[in-house]
Amino acid sequence: MDLFHTTPDPTLNLLPKDGKAFYYGSILDQDQADYYLHELMTNIEWRHDQLKMFGRTITTKRKVAWYGDSPFEYTYSHSSKQALPWTRELLELKTLLEKTSGECYNSCLLNLYHDGSEGMGWHSDDEKELKKNGAIASLSLGADRKFIFRHKKTKEKVDLFLHDGSLLVMKGTTQTHWQHRLPPTRRVLEPRINLTFRTIDTVQGASPAKSPVN
Image 1: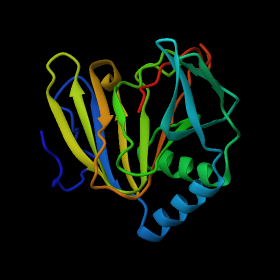
Image 2 (image 1 turned 180 degrees about the vertical axis):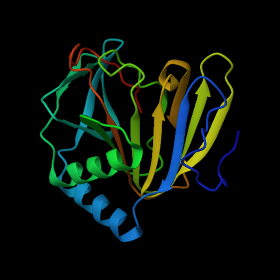
Image 3 (image 1 turned 120 degrees about the vertical axis):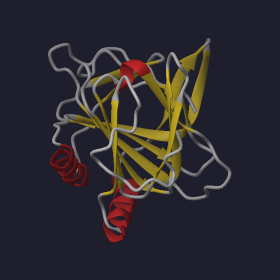
Image 4 (image 1 turned 45 degrees about the horizontal axis):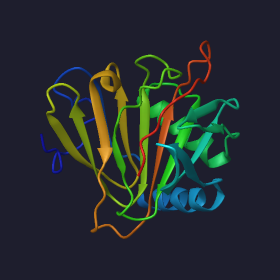
């Protein structure tokens, strides 16, 4: 299903079955989107991932950062992160997304893609330390990028563009039955920051997780 030219409707479930995904379109005006992109580029403690896979250490092209209510630990591919305290800008965005989506979040994973050559492979945000069937709010800043859902069994796909300042909310059993990816492209020369606000299950605690590599 191609949703590239569909008018955003936050009440419309983009997925035909086995999950829920809602695209709100831009929830920030251009000045706000530009402001937060600049502030996050400047003030976030960005780091390249160092992952150990198949006996080798791999440095990812994209940069990442992990923030939260508490110093939640996030571990994947023998690499661990501890959540940093919220910045003012992240708290402002967290408040906005909670009000818009009607959900609550206690952590945020940020990805910085310097241009279209950097992407994300097929994966699900189904780590066991996350709240079961909890909502994940994905805010995009910067370059417009293609985003694809793929059903794990049927392989049917749903494609859309994530625009500057836009919000995508995934919830229910989406992570159980669907994967998603951000494909690389030579057409995009500008950076993009993706913020995924999520909820760590504080009863279980933050236990080992996995991450796709790109």
